[in-house]
Structures are given as structure tokens and as C-alpha cells.
Length: 214
Image (tube, rainbow, N blue to C red; front, side, top):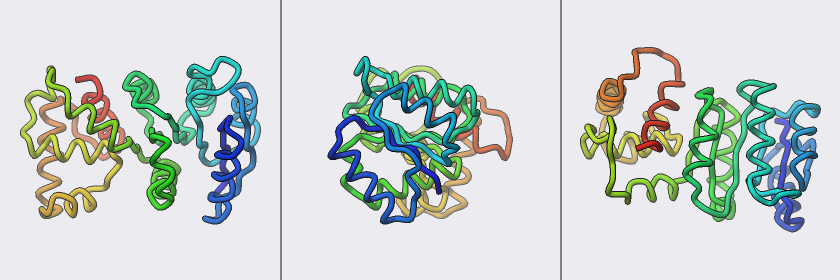
């Protein structure tokens, strides 16, 4: 699997490159700034990209903007964003095209190699992965409003795990319920969020967006 990596801290970039190689990924470009990232995304044909949000020259959201620009030209290009902080606005912007194949992880998560590689593979396969800490921060808010306010506590649990990118089977295992119970909870969530019936995984993205926007 071909990977483009964007990280301006040289030690972290080298460490990530070695880790990816160890797990069988082909790092076709490892860059340290926004313009180089955009060029690599458009010209090196990656299967997935690992992108730090803050890159030179602006050190603001250069990495995110390069990734979003590339996805507009290559719809559905899988992007796993890394950030040092929980940035709800960035998470919403990443999900806004509703195409899936995106992830948002805190940098501390990449020290857990198994979690990082699992998240990268899920994004490359078209899934949506949100860092558990991002979801935990949102759950801690007391101003829930809109359609997500109609969800039961169990449905909130299911939606939180969906936002982390978990499959139905993984959600069932985490909550110690049956697969059929999870399916019923998800159907209820989609109904309460007015998401029309479809086999398309994009509904899961839309549900996560509703969750982030609450």
C-alpha cells in the first residue's frame, strides 16, 4: 500500500516512516511542508496519506488544507489527519464532503502502534476513524441540542463507537450486546437523525457529522 507522509518534525517523520515500512507499507513520499504535500498527493498516486495538520509555511492548518484540496481533485482519497489537539472544527471540515475514507487522530495515539496501523488500514479501506479523545470531549459537553438530543444513552454509546470507526461486530463486543441489537440501535439512530435507508456507509459519516455538530 502506497503512503504519503507529511510531518515537519524530522524525528517523528523518520520514526513513522520506519514503522510504516515495518508493517509493509510503501512510503512513496515523506514531506515536511504544505506545498510538497499537495504535490505528492496529486502526483505520487498514494493509496492513503498520513498528514499533520500544522505544516510550514504557515504552521496553522496547512496540512489539512492541502489534504482537502487534493480530495477535491481526487475524490475519496483516503486521508488520516494527525493533530496535537482536539480541534472540533477541523474534524467537521474533514468530514464535510461525506465521502468517508478519513480519520482524525491525536498524535499521542501514534505511540500505540497497533491502534495507529489499524486506524490507517480502516481509512485506506474507506472507513471513518475519529480519535476516542475527540469523541470523549464531545460527550462531556452539556449543551447537546438538535436531533442527537433525541438519542437514548445506549444510542449515544453506539454512535460514539461508530464515530471511532468501529464495525457493528466491534461495537457489539465493546458494549457486550448482540450484533442484532447493534443493528437495531443503528437503525434507530438513522431514523432519529432522518438519514434515509441505504446500504451506503456514507450514512455512518452523516451520523458522525450530526454528532460533531451537536
